[in-house]
Amino acid sequence: MDPVPPIASLVEGVRSADRASIGRAITLVESNLAEHREMAQDLLTELLPFTGGSHRIGITGVPGVGKSTFIETLGSTLTGRGRRVAVLAVDPTSSRTGGSILGDKTRMTTLANDPSAFVRPSPTSGELGGVTRMTRETMLICEAAGYDVVLVETVGVGQSETVVADMVDFFLVLMLPGAGDELQGIKKGILELADMIAVNKADGANVNAAEAAAREYEIALHLTAPASPLWSPPVLTCAGLTGAGVDDLWDRVEEHRSILSQAGELEGRREQQNVRWMWSMLDDRLNDGLRSHPSVKTLLPELEAQVRAGSTTPVSAVDQLLDAFLDN
Image (cartoon, rainbow, N blue to C red; front, side, top):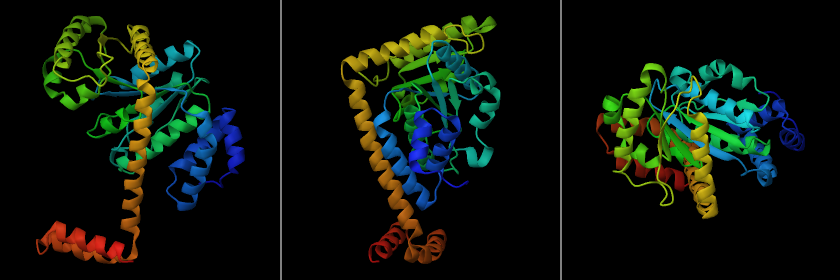
């Protein structure tokens, strides 16, 4: 990592929407070095008064649903309306596959080159907790830089949907036409998180299948409790490739924000998200401290071998590790 500019310089650069400064600020919060972590928190403290003004949208979808094309079309639609859009990603698989958003960035050529947009991958090293922290803090930097819509993409792998839903105002689930097998594979938990389901690729020969799928998803949603008593998640059809239905989709997203804001629920949701974020960060710090503790590092290989061999129980091993951690 290049030498870190003075915090005051970074703050000024981010606030003036200088892309190089934004990139350096994000690189700083992504660093795992202790001295960089402290500097990153100083930076975020300075930027915090300028955050919170964006519309935070989480987007997930089954493999092959066309998230990249959809996000580029939605982002371009929004910049065309005068909005400034940041695209971030939560991808806990990146250490194994290189992740999806890096490829998305090369495919989102229009959006990546739009002066009113910013596309950024989130490295994870396979740790979902780490990418959660990085994505949240990157979101704050983008907000301080004046991006008023933040699209947070998840690759749709297990827990990643839950952590993304817990950092956004609106959670959009993209689905494919042809409900059948896809409907059987939907996890109930994902439906409960959804503020909207959009059946993508509803163009050409897929239009009828998409409309049929939408009806099936509407029935499925009736079997779940909505995330808010003020909002019944709609099911729409759209086509990221042609842009059909994208304007209507965004209008519904805006409607959701208006309803929840007027009732004070959106503010309450963000407050609860911040508290959960605090506890998540505490868990991460405690875990880091435990694993890096000298006595724990000494004991760990032997205890892992004993647990593997069945000569001690996992509970006993945990007790010994905690005793070593707390006694020093």
